[in-house]
Image: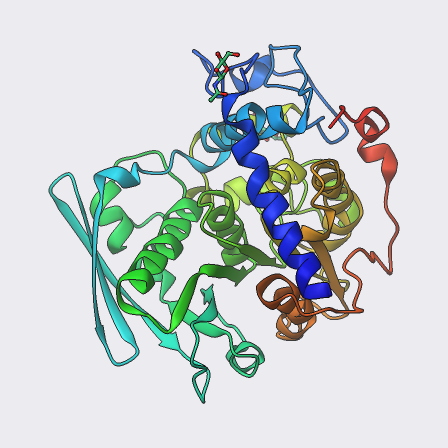
Length: 394
Ligand SMILES: *[C@@H]1O[C@H](CO)[C@@H](O)[C@H](O)[C@H]1NC(C)=O
Ligand SMILES: *[C@@H]1O[C@H](CO)[C@@H](O)[C@H](O)[C@H]1NC(C)=O
């Protein structure tokens, strides 16, 4: 029964974007001129995700309009003000060669070439039908997934782009000189690995794909899920600011990771435009809930440790999650977003076990009694998202 329900939910969520194709947008996804940071109004609570980009005063009027107009605008807006613009994949050629469980990936574009490799870990014994896959960067507990007939594919993110101002690695071999943040470079790495799996790994079901990483790599996994609709399940772990930590409400954590110290500590994660919001982060025309909401109807599970103040777990749990879930609920896909609170601190490996029932529900329709809405030890702060009292019609 649960399997059938999960399947129907999948069908409904797949149908929604199709319905939207013929909707006329009152505000175009990309404005003629992007407003500057200082021209945005100060908004001290989480911005209303249903409002189109300032200076438009229009508001989304239906689910169909969200998918046809507002979601594409959010994806453009996030690239303009935070990530930098993702390269045009239609101009790239991807080739892959597999040797055992190692895949060498080459991408060419505009006469340049970048290469890196990925490692495939398959469950043993291997099922006779293709298995879902989780693509991961950084440390992950592979066995949690392998033991549940899910493949784990890893790649060395530093061979795509280093975690520094350095411009080495496959991504920068192609795109050095562009104002793009490293989070996008790493996201691009996830996507090119998926391309390579489609070319070389018949053991893997490329329609059931998760992406994960922790901390800065959790920010990257979030970007990977946002920027490629082939990603079925986005799994950012302990992701913090520029992930699912709020720019606003950063004092909730007691330690205060915020736009300023994040942008100044690792300026390469984002584009240069994000820096124009330093000392005026309340003018950012979105907050982390908007990134999460733009992933709908696809699945998103958010790992946070209650003992992880620096990345403001409390802010992610009590303001970002409920604000994003309000959009998922309105779109009729509420169960597709989950908050996976756990005890423990930053990037604790137990997080991978904690999200597993959600992963199995999404990939296999396996029922679970684990609830993914619980914010314990905290409580939601509805004053942070006052627009939920004025949700548009469906
Ligand atoms: C799309 O909308 C236009 C204008 O309302 C209409 O003429 C056209 O037939 C519609 N196309 C489809 C495929 O529904
Ligand atoms: C931001 O504010 C701090 C503290 O007042 C100041 O030192 C810094 O120069 C400001 N930076 C910008 C870019 O305005």
